Length: 287
Image 1 (cartoon, rainbow, N blue to C red):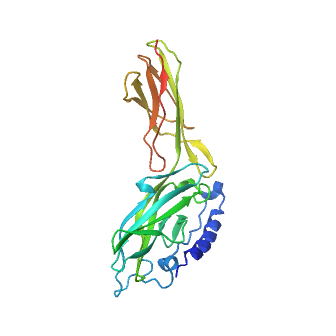
Image 2 (tube, rainbow, N blue to C red):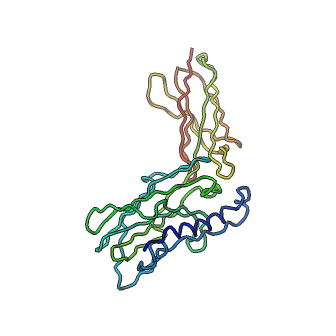
Image 3 (cartoon, one colour):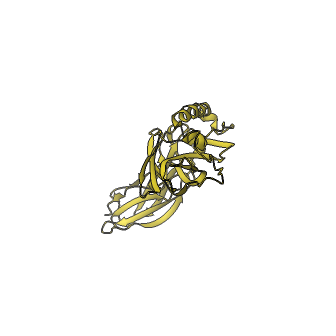
């Protein structure tokens, strides 16, 4: 018998109590640890070998693959929710009848969980590739300012994966894999003046910013290396002219000498908490 819906209701209440910490204070005080469910709570009280505790008489399923968001980083802006796909592939002599995946943030699943998102579905949709192996798919919706209630949640999250076999034996690992959750980045460029005389000075300005989940706005990403790149009008390839750092408000500004018609852009390589971003080229006509 499945009781995931009950777990969702109880855990949701716990999550809401933790998320009640004001965003402005979240980074300045201890955040309550969220209480994640066990295998027995997810798959039902009849499930054998809950939470990584196996019994000698039980052959547990083997989890061979976990895919989160198609293998891509999970990037969120300031307000829009994002729904990602997740899947777990497992095998067992009696077949696989259900799967489970959630994502959590913290150092220890028992004592230090400050972020947690669970599947939307009460049961996974499992497709058999053989009599013993199946891939079970679910979706997870993540909401900035709710699930992501503080900026410190950007970075590496851990993945809990579970599988339920036909004989009710269970595989469960709270440290099965990792996934990266990032704050959406934005980058602008303006190359001026236009047109410019050959040999004249071109000033390239711009700004690097990223989502702030606590204020629901985009704030400047400070002291980050950003490349100024150029391609000739007749070329399809950009080359890096110089690298500069964003200032204390995320602003970018540098100068170069005009030589030929072409496109100028800024490019940011990204960090563990913030994805890479590159502007479109800004054309400057050189007379």
